[in-house]
Image (cartoon, rainbow, N blue to C red; front, side, top):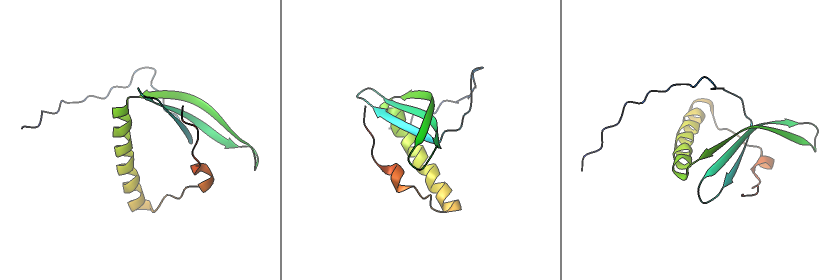
Length: 98
């Protein structure tokens, strides 16, 4: 069976396109989609962390899986160049699933 021809893809930024920095992402999952909420995390004190959410993005399950694959590939490339990325174990506790 022959592989289908890949279309040419042209990337165009809409006039309202913006780039932002996020150091917090929350993931909510339901049967139809994945919802990523991006924000900035600021530690106010040893016991207080504030997260200011600024953008939510819905992904289909297929796009979420494709995003997982491309992120894994890019993280592996980053780590092979710059070394292992260490995570704070306090930030790895599982959160609620919505």
